Amino acid sequence: MSFVSQTPISSSVRYPPGPKGYPILGNLPELYRDPLGFLNRCNRNYGDIIRVQLFKDFVYILNHPDYIEEVLVKKSNKFAKPDFGNIFRLIVGNGLVTSEGNFWHRQRQLIQPSFHRQRFANYGELMVAYTTHLLTTWQDGQTRYIYQDMKRLALETITKILFQGNMPNKEDDVETAIEVSIKCFDRADSLFFSPLSWFPTPTKLHFHKALQRLDAIVYSIIQRRRITGGDREDLLSMFLYIQDANGICMTDKELRDEVMTLLVAGSETVSIALSWTWYLLSQHPEVEAKLTAELQTSLGNRKPTPADLPQLRYAEMVVMESLRLYPPTWFLSRTVVSECEIAGYPLPAGGSVLLCPWMIHRDHRFFEEPEIFTPERWANDLVKRLPKFAYFPFGGGARGCIGKYFAMMQAVLVLATIAQKFRLTLLPPSHRVKPLPGLTLRPNSGLKMLLTKR
Image 1: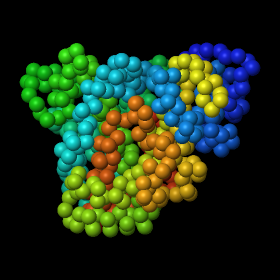
Image 2: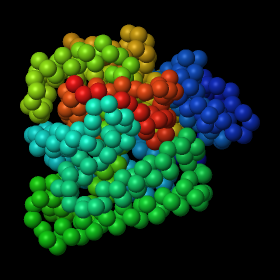
Image 3: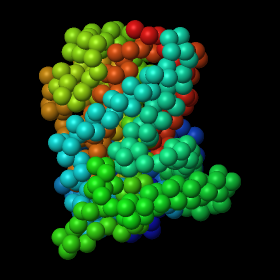
Image 4: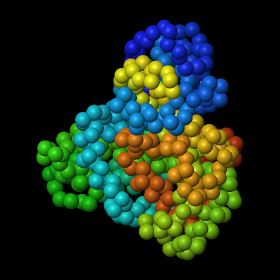
């Protein structure tokens, strides 16, 4: 979230309600100590639009689908992606997540065909193949840290799709660099207090070294591919040759930024979604039983394929419910670029707006018993009956996630492939598992689980 000088508005203006803060610091200490708890209390005590103070600036929290639609769709020209701070922009550069304006439109148009659903069959086969390979390393009665396994699986899959797996002996370097990069940005103070992002802590120095290694790997692949040419049937091949309306291809820096965006997004969010899904299934054996029954009926003993997705409806509902309770992208923020009005309140230019799937997804107005893991709620097209932004784990509007169908396909196919062969039981102390809100919503542990072969 960025902090830009806000345009003053008249002292007679009626402000949204919000919690009283500390002198000078405002609400920053509460937000830093417990971001999710603080946001939940604000929602409970102050309603659908809330003003909180962070030092001299104000953040407006919107807790209703209609207001979120105004920001992301109806009045999207009044809002922009925030300056995520030097740390995050160094990771992904000026890729789709961070770019704005005409450049973003150009990049989106160039990349969109790569994510056409007709291409997903090949991607899906790779997802199943890499998951099957992972299972060859699992044994009955073994203990695994599932979050680590899901991270490595997601990274291996996305690197294969990006580079045709052409990173010999570099997977460990890439995984380490991404992990260091995310951790450096994975603190509440980094998220909500970007003015401190310049401070040269040892962690950030470690980050710069990791990023240099990652850049060297990605740039060497790009440069080698330009020399050798040819279509490797991977995303990088497509990115190298696509041209904009003026016949101009992407530069090495533009390719690097888009590749880095997909590496981080493709490994981080999917691995988190799968990790939370295994956690929830371990806590709800009745849901797991229904899932395995569907897999037996639909697949028998054969591996799933993308063609099976329409028959894996309960598996899809399990993933959707996991994303509802633990959305990896648990918040979205926008900067107000020109003064506008939401819910009768003026939002000043330069102000920040927070949209939080974590809270909306747990709102009893839209979901019955919202704290309960109930995949069956998604039957009978619930998503079509909900307000448009009551469920938005992939964002929405023009800036919605370009890879949302890709991510859902991967989550369902990986879930089906593993659940066919193994049951995962969370080992003590399971009561200590809780979400860790940072750049994404990770579990606070590696999710130590016992494997039982079916």
